[in-house]
Image 1: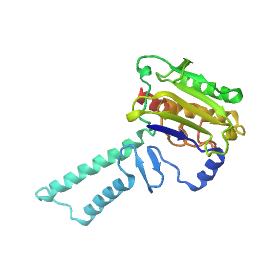
Image 2: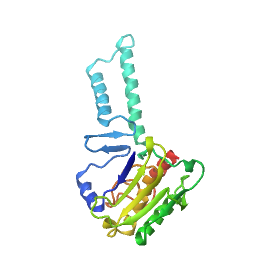
Image 3: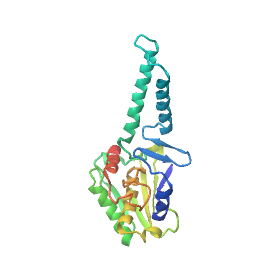
Image 4: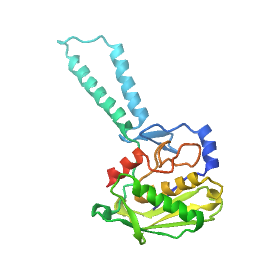
Amino acid sequence: MCYSRAELPVATVRSLNHNTPRLRSGTRLMRGGGWHLTNSGLPVWVRGHVVRAWLLSIRRRPFPSLGDAPFLRVTALALLAAVLFVLCFSASAHAYTTEGCYWPRVYRGESIPWTNYASGPDAQSFFFAKNAWNAAPTPVYIAGSGNNIQASGAYYGNTGWDGITYYSCPNAAVFVSPVNVYENDYYTNSYSARDAESVTTHEFGHALGLNHSYCGTLMYYGTGGGCRPNTPQGDDVNGINHIY
């Protein structure tokens, strides 16, 4: 099965920033579904209703004494509430999400070969991306010449994405070479060097196994608006270290 990860260009992000609720830590917005899902796997609205229902049930009943039979039921509900509380707050302990794909050569202590087919400013942005990930405190190292990751930059037109990554990952496991990373000059030619670097470094994050994350991390889905840096942040690094 083949997948792609695309990012919104600056103009689109500026529009969305005014009309879209900001994602909080540990949350992915499931577009079209009308609800959001946290890393704990429980929909926020479900957990909220469960806790609210429990609180209302406590308020509507007289508190039982130790000799009453309902005491055990109330105790069980209290334990359930404690578990839900832990789930709610453990979900925000990290916000990174992964694609479920990885490079097995990293486990063997080997570097990930890549080829930079871009030229000019695009090539410089991709070299920046490689060096930024190599400088991060992870076991991943991108080096040499090969086809594991192939980077290209060109004028692809008004596509709605300024960067995109195509990859194949059968059964959500091992990446199949090559993983192709693209930078779209239609948008990035008007970007600052920093924003263009954030595009390529972000796409390399996908090529290493990361999915989209929240504002303030490299894996934020949009360019511009002050939300995305051009180097891996703590949560991005934690995500890669979780994979490898």
